[in-house]
Length: 175
Image 1 (cartoon, rainbow, N blue to C red):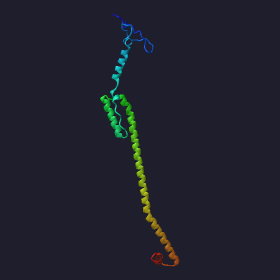
Image 2: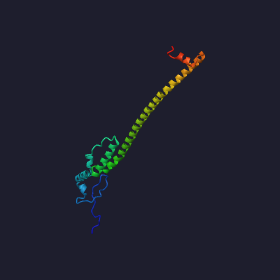
Image 3: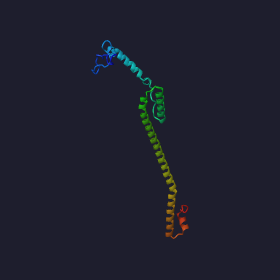
Image 4: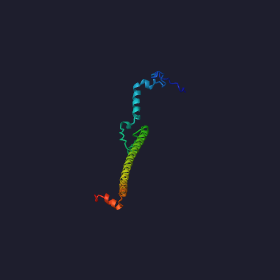
């Protein structure tokens, strides 16, 4: 029976200048130090298998200017994650941004609607003011007529005329 650590360690040193801890082969070096090209080749193969094909074929997000467009983009992200076209971390990174965009759209929409209502209210108030002025115009004319009548009555009294005679004197037909 041989002890567990009876295999000698690799004689090479790592990039950090520490002794390599891998078991040595017949030449005294570990597999990767004996075949340095094989290590880089295996690294490339491993990198390719971990590379997401969604990054190569990622489609552009549509313009997110309406709440419906944001909803559709979220639905597409869910489909892509479920189909394996998009890594869940990428979708998780986009989710807060889509939420922020949706809130900005809602705020902008509310501001636009409020401005429209304020404009409509101002127009309605202006129309009411105009109606009040037009409604009060006959009253102002009536007040003028009453004042004019009072003056005629007073003049008639100072001239010693009766009311009917004063009206005849002031009427346009009498002149």
